Amino acid sequence: MKYALVTGGSRGIGRAICLELGNMGYHVLVNYQSNEEAARQTLQLISDNGGEGSLLPFDVSDRIQTRQVLENWLQQEDGRCIEVLVNNAGHRKDNLMLWQEDPDWDSVINTHLGGFYAVTQCLLKAMLRNKYGRIINIVSLSGLSGMAGQTNYSAAKGGIIAASKALAQEMARKNLTVNCIAPGFISTDMTQDLPEQDIKATIPMRRFGTPEEVAAVAGFLASSRASYVTGEVISVNGGLYM
Ligand code: NAP
Image (cartoon, rainbow, N blue to C red):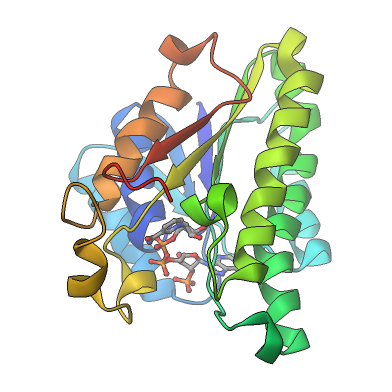
C-alpha cells in the first residue's frame, strides 16, 4: 500500500489534492485540525471515486502532537512509509504590521513554517529508507512577492520556499524531490471574505482559480513524470505576478 499525507485535507485546496492523489492510487491520509465533518466528506468523495483513505487529525502547529501522531502511525506497521507529503494546512491572520498582535504573528508562522518543519522532519527518515519521496509545499504568491497586510503570512510562505530549495539540495541524490506550488487567488473558505469583484479586475484571467487547478499541478509533482523537477516553485495564479 502506498500512502500520501495531505495536511489540511478536509477542505479547499487540500481536499482537491486528496481526491487527485486518491485517483492516482494512493491511500490518502486526510489530516485536519478540527472540522471532522468536512474531513469525512473528503473521505467519502475519495471512496466515491473508487479510492481509499483514512483520517489523521492533528494540529500541525503543535510540534509535540504532530510528532506523537506521526510516529505512532509509522510504528503501527513496520515498513510503512508515506511516499507523498503535501504540506497544505494553513490560515490567514491579516493585519498591517503596525497593528499586528503577537498571537497572530505566532500562529501564522507556527502553522505554515512550523508545520512544514514538524511534519516533514518526522517523515524524512522513512522516505529515505523507501528511496523515493515527493514533498509538495503549498505556498503562495504572497511568499514570492510579499503582500501588504500579510507580513506574517508572506514571511511564513517565503520561509517555506527557501527551506524547500535547501531541502531539495539535501535530498536530491536520494530520489526525494521537494517542490512548492504558489497559488494566486483560489476560491475556498480562506478567500471568502475578500472583495472578489475588485480583485478579479487585477488578475489577467479575470477570475479566481479553482482548488482542482492547484490539485492538477500537485498530481504532476507527485507523479514519477516529475522525477527531474526539484527545488522548484510553480505558480498557479491566472497570470497575476505582482
Ligand atoms: P481552507 O479552505 O481555509 O482550508 C484550510 C485547511 O487547513 C483546512 O483543512 C483546515 O482544517 C486546515 N488547517 C488549518 N490550520 C491547521 C492546523 N493548525 N493543523 C491542521 N490543519 C489545519 O484553505 P485553502 O484556501 O484551501 O488553503 C490551503 C493552503 O493553500 C494554505 O496553506 C493556504 O495558505 C494556501 N493558499 C491558498 C490560497 C487561496 O487563495 N485559497 C492562495 C495561496 C495559498 P479544518 O477543516 O479542521 O479547519
